[in-house]
Length: 275
Image (cartoon, rainbow, N blue to C red; front, side, top):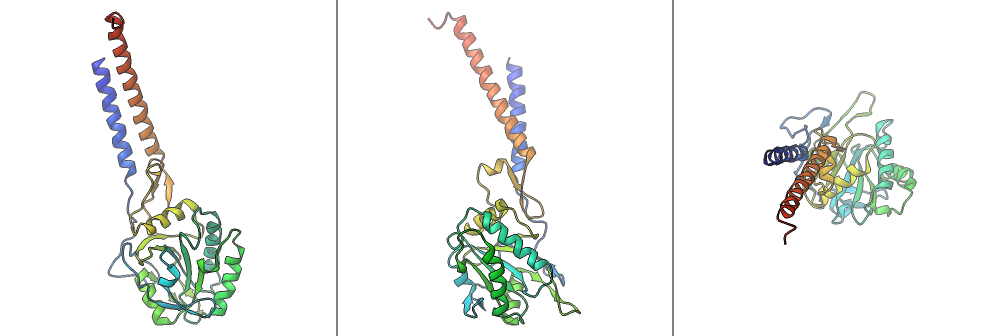
């Protein structure tokens, strides 16, 4: 019996070790570097962007990033309003995920789509806002998703701080990356989210990170047993190995308790029922 218990205990500890390894949340594979590509993103996780930068909103009124954030996490989408391709896909993906997240816009977070084309105008910004913000099928305050334009100096100060690099090509269009960038109310960069479609769980986790003013993924205790942040830093995924590890641990602990209780009952019976 003793040897069996010891073997089961060793298995239990192995299960704990497996689960602990699975709980490790890797940092993004993209790290900030002194050099940068002509087109691409160099992540500046944990760094702070200048929240006092002033842009024009879709109504032509000057507004700072701090005013748009309004003390809440801010989700930044860098784009340009005459983009013939991927920008509209990102707009659509953002509009769809904003309908699904549980957090309340204007209360738990705000969004700013910012054009990196200094030739874009508030009129173009308003057109895009009416198109995508207007399609959201949930209560969504107009100030919770702003569409901004700015001059080249202001734009470059922001894109440099974000690590967002692009070029204007020979057709007078832009070659550029795409990402949603989550920052805290103080402008600390918490997460970069790539792609044109977004999962609500990823979005909610990124908002939580920005709210906590942290750039390492913050996951609830329960979610740690089911989700991990992938190595590319782009999303949370179901971790089957981790779940198996914890499940095995719980199962083995239950067996140990059962064996201990059975042994105790045998001793009681051997002593005449405890009389």
